[in-house]
Every structure is written in structure tokens, then in C-alpha cells.
Length: 103
Length: 191
Ligand SMILES: [Zn+2]
Image: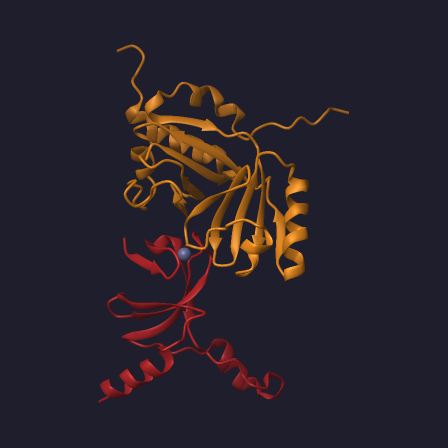
């Protein structure tokens, strides 16, 4: 079984964790003004990255805190985990790596 | 009208638990008052006591214990106060600072595991390293034991004394699971 590192509790078995989908999906600045289509994109549309992906996880059977992680969706390997109160390098870092690997 | 008597969730297991040898002793702890407090860094000061700020540790708190449950969340217990008294005392201290307190006395019951082999029993259903070198007195963990979520407290520096806090509705399941896990270390009578 894979061990996932909780930023508070350290490495724990993956059954203790709950997956929360893509991280850093920006909430619309003026939610009342977006069109139905834009709102649907915010609610339902997510990237389907192969490779490094910024995700939200919750240590639901332990400290019950949400945190962010960068995980490789092809190998399942967790590259790093970040507390919610820590600076979030993900977005820019991922964008940079995506650009550098683009054909 | 029938009188409602308070019974322990593990009353039906008491005979089976008493039969266990000292190396894998399991006893149901008496009821204690427990409360969950949510408050930022000011909590320690407000309660005039050192609350543990290191993740997954516990500390003595008056007659009871304070267990780290999260960066802003602690489980406090008291053996001398009633649940109402404990909640009222903590409420007076933390509410002015924007914190909150909830009486959770009826939520969990305690199982005390003592003996030289209880670490082996726990290891059958818990992936955490319980060796006293890394899980000595003062350490705690919220994790799964078997299929049940528990709060595990290390009470000894030699790994022979643990307190397992489990939700009351899971207590029967966990008692059965522990008895099964302890079977290997229980000598049979007619041999
Ligand atoms: Zn955790």
C-alpha cells in the first residue's frame, strides 16, 4: 500500500486519505455575473493532466486537515505536499514545468 | 415506566476481557468528561496550561489530558469534573477569544492496553510504528485500528501501556477485533 505524507502527521497509509480533485481552481471574481456556461466550467470542468498535477487531499481518518499535493498521475508518485497556510508554489511551478515539457 | 440505567458499551465484553493474560491486558476505562476545543495559538494561554502544539502529542492537563487533534483543535479530558463543569470552564476561557468548545464526553470510550505484547496486538491492525523509540510516552495518533478510527495515546516509555479512544458505536467491533488479535498471545486452558 502506498504511503502518503500528511504535512501534519507524516507518512500514513493511503486509506486514511480522501481525494479532493484539482487544486487552485479560482473562484469567479463576480459569481453573480458569470454566464451559465462559465459557471459550469468553474463547477465541473477540470484538467486531465498526465504527469505532475496539483491536487487537494484530506487526511480524513487522521487530523482531518486539507492540504495540497503535487502528484504524478502516471506514476502515482507524490512529489511534495503543502499545508494550506504555506506559500503555494504549485500553480506557477506547474505552469513553468508544463511549458518546458511542451513539444 | 422503566428506569434507564447508564451502561458501558462494552459491558457484554467484560468477562472476555477479564480472561486475557497480563501480557495482553485490555480493560475498559471508566467514563471521563471530554471536550473538544477549537482555538488558535491563544488557546494555551487562555486555558492557563500548556496545550501540546507539536502534532500527534498529548500532555497532562489538570486531572486529565490534552490531546493534539489538529493545529487549532484539542481534545481535553477531566477525571474530576462533570462534562458540564468541564465545558463551562473551558467555554469561559476560550469563547472571549473567538474559540469554541463542544462537550464530546459521550462520543468516545477508552480502552487501556497494558502488557508486554500489546504492541504486537496493535501492530496487527495499525500501520504506525509503535516502537517506544518513536512512539514513547506523550505521543498520540489519530489513525485506523482494524477498520475503526481511533485516537491512540502512548502512556509508557517502554511500549507496554496504551490508551485507545474509540467512538462508542465502534467499541464492540473494536473489542471483538482486539480479542481476536490477542488470541495468539492467549494460552489455551486445557493444555
Ligand atoms: Zn494528518
